[in-house]
Each structure stands twice: as structure tokens, then as C-alpha cells.
Image 1: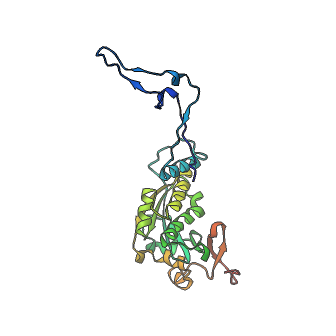
Image 2: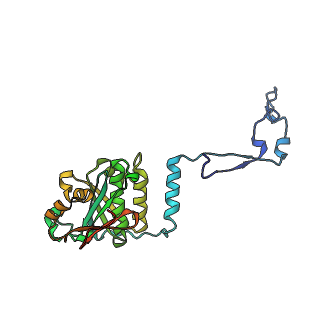
Image 3: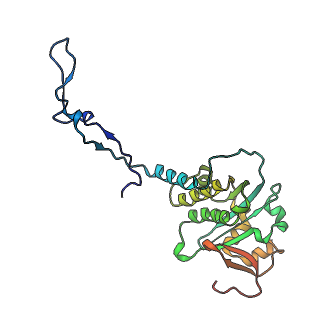
Length: 253
């Protein structure tokens, strides 16, 4: 595969070493090294050096190249930001998540106030199924695709129950398949000046997001009786779905 960038530099032929361009030293103690041929310095042709950029560096350059189309290089440091807490989860068949704006309490302690429009479910088509780590990262990314326009200038605390994704989002990269999704997530957050913080929580404490990812409507209704049923999955770009009221079963699901 050819590299995306070629760093080229032209050097005078006098700097090249060839059989015709040798350095000789006089046998007398007072003499200094001299070149036996100066014709190389007069030659008009040059050489081109090519260096292959490491893949990690190439990905970083592409990331910044994409970001700079939307970022003017000026960032005002603001320690006082509005804050939301985002909870996501995934399984092999779907993604789910929700966010709360009251950060003083755990989601379970304010469940009666969680708005239905602040939750999502997204089915995973069989042909798009991957590892659970990829799906866990995708759940966070899908939530940002859906709500990031509302979070410009915010701090978003992301709660996940997958250790690999916790470390990947925290570091900004991950080894293996989730890395592309994590980079896209950080790119989207950077464009909208969203500060991300990642926290791990147990699967037991992530019940609602887990149920959303599995489309467990009956158990969701038990946790959130104020959400009106049945829950309809409306197709959105990138397979996103919103929870909305439906008077009849949704076709196509």
C-alpha cells in the first residue's frame, strides 16, 4: 500500500557517496583531506527520499485534518460548564442509552423524572454485528450523534460498564476494532467543545441502559411507568431510534 504522504527532499549530488566520489587523505602529516573529484557537486540531478508514515501517526494527522475544517484554533477555557450524565449499554443485537440533567443524584433516585425523549434504542442489523466492545463504543457514539447538538459547551460524564471502553474513551484511543469509533467520538466532541469524562459502573447499576439495548419493553415499563406505551422505534439516520408513543405496532421491525 502506498503511503498517503511522501516527504521528499533534494540533496546535492556532492553529498552522495558513490565509487566515483571518494574521500582521500594525503600521506603527509601537514596535508588535509581533499576530494579526488568535484564533478558530483556540478551535477544537476538530485535524489528523492521517501519515508513511510507509521499508521498511528497517519491516523492522528487525519484526525486533526478533519477537525481543523470546523475548529478555528481558539478555545476559551471554561471551568464552569453545564453538566449531564450519560448512561449507555450494548448487546449483540442492539444499543441503548439515556441521559439525566440532575447530576446531584444517581439515575435510579430520579427515575420518575427521566424524560422519555432523553432515551434511545438502536437495533443492530445482523450484517453490522461486531464484537461487544465495538457495540459498547458505538452506543456512546450514537448517543452523541443524537444529542451532541444540545450539549455544545457542556461537560458530559459517560457511565459505561465495559472496562475496555472506559479506558479507551479516557485515553482517546484503543487497540483493536473499537479505536475507529472512539476516535470519531472524540472528533465529534472536539468540534462542539464538549468535555468528556468517563466513569465505570457495574452492570447491576446500569439496568435501564441494559434493558433499552435489549428492547425489554415490559421491564422498561416497570422501571419507568411514566413513559407511555407501547414504545415505538422510529428509524433515524445511522440506525438510531427514539422512544415515542405509538397507537399501532410499527411496521418493519
